[in-house]
Image (cartoon, rainbow, N blue to C red; front, side):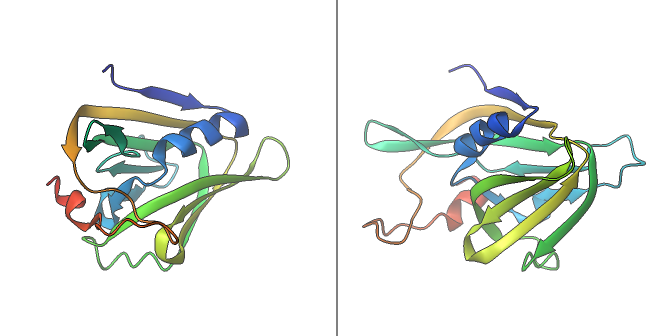
Length: 157
């Protein structure tokens, strides 16, 4: 399968990126906010895989990078940066419009963890970084019968 590369420049595009990343897992230590003065991306994260896709009896994950440009400020709730090995599961990415084209991008994670980015405008890139690998683990959601956990996925197991 060809690696995925998506650019999001408006709210509708961002919803597509969000759907591809639902249930992605990421280590806190793999996320970075670099202030705007730098040549590096302002906010980026490398997940251990975007949403698992069912193939035969297994699921697949793929290492993926997500970058947000034109970030003015970043805030978080319950992220715990002092625990870089903590694994979070991304539930959704939302956009709240401000004075067009600015607004707030919110990354919602399980455990009520959030990251809010004040942005000049939506300018986001999602890019697969390598091949997919098989896993038996399936994301767990309240009300589902799934029992397995995603915790071992962060190590690439």
